[in-house]
Length: 168
Length: 188
Ligand SMILES: [Mg+2]
Image (cartoon, rainbow over all chains, first blue to last red; front, side, top):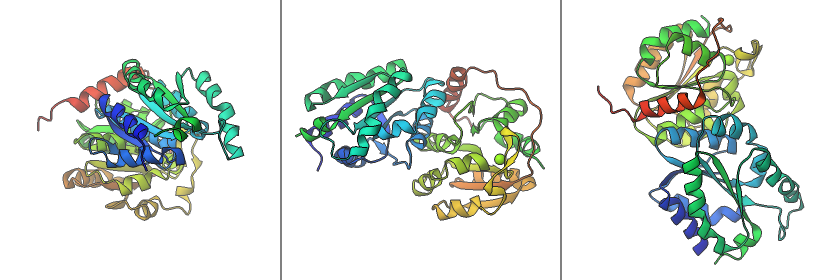
C-alpha cells in the first residue's frame, strides 16, 4: 500500500516535469513504483538491470522527457561505467531515487556489504547524495530534482530503512 | 560484405533519420560515411545502444533507428524483452551481426556460432523480426520505415573493419546537435 510519503515523492516528480521513469524493484520501493505505474503523466518502463535503465533514461532525455531511475543501492555495483561514460560524459541529468538497504534496521546481512560501498562509490564518481532517514526529509526532494536538471548531472537520493518504515 | 559496405548501402536510407549508433567501429564508420546532426554516436558504454534508441523512441514520435551489433546486444540481451513488452512503432532495431567483436579485433561472438539473435528477439516478444543477408539490409530498412511498425532487423554480414579515424566530436556537442535534430519540426 502506498503511503502519503510515496505520494509526496510522486508529487515532487510531477512538479519537476519528470515524464519518464524506469525502475528495478525493491521491497521498500513497492509503494512508489505502484504509484508511478498508476500516474498517467509518468511513462513507466520497468527495466531488467540498472545500466539498461540508464540507457533508456538517456534516450528519453534526448527525446525531450526528463527522466528518473528508481533502484536499490546494490545497483551502484552495476552502473559505474554507465554513469561515467554515458550520463556524466554526455552531460545528462539523472536523479536516482535509491532504496538504501543495509543501514540500521536491515534484516538481511548481505545487504550491509553494498551499504558499506554505497557512499564511497558515489564520492568516487563525484555524485552528490542526499541521505533521507526520516519522512519529513521528503520535502527536500523537489529542490534536489531541480538541482539535477539544472546542473545536468546524476544525483542520488539515498532513502534508508528508517525513512521507509516510519513513512505514513 | 563487411559492416562498412553494409553501412555504405544504408547511407541514402539513413539520411535525415534519427540514428543511434553503437560504440567503436560502427559509429566511426558511420561518422566517416554520413555525419549528420541526427546521428547519436556512442563514444563509450558497451551494450546500451538499443536501450538508448528505445528510450528515445518512447519519448517522441519520430522514427528512431538504432544500429547495434551482435556483441553489444549479447552484453545487454535483456533489453530485448523491454523492447518486446513496450511497443513503440517508431522504433527500428538494426543489429549488424558479423559474428564478432569488431572493435576489439574480431574475436568471435556466440551469435556467430549457435546463438540466433533473431530467435532471441522473437522469444523476448519482439514483433516483426527479420533476419536478412547484408545485401538486403537497405531494402529491409526501407520497408521497416515505410511500415511504421516496431521492427528488429538482424543483418548477417562478414567480420572486418576498415581504417577510419576516431570521432573527435565533443560528447556534449553530439548530444546537443542531436537533441536539436529531434526537436526540429517534420517538414515532409
Ligand atoms: Mg559484431
